[in-house]
Length: 113
Image (cartoon, rainbow, N blue to C red; front, side, top):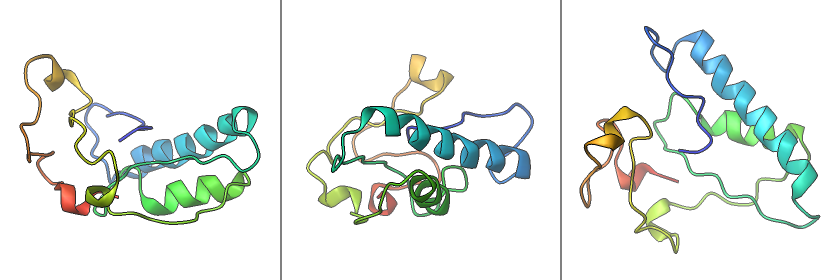
């Protein structure tokens, strides 16, 4: 997922400190976009139904606080870029990437949105 606040050593994604980082990142992400996105522009953010980091509520909340409107949620497999190469987004990418049809341990493509 991008944006993603990254991992914090010794903490899990559901920890309140890590959740605050993700929520704050969404606010700051959309605040920064206000400078660059023209009126009527579209911003697309990918996440996962089971995400405990970049949650749907953090994405839509950060967007709403910065004058962006949520128009639709699309299952990732129905999107035109559904064949993109997944990445772990951390040190594992240096030696291994998810294979075709494989995702993160707790996430599957049918739950991406």
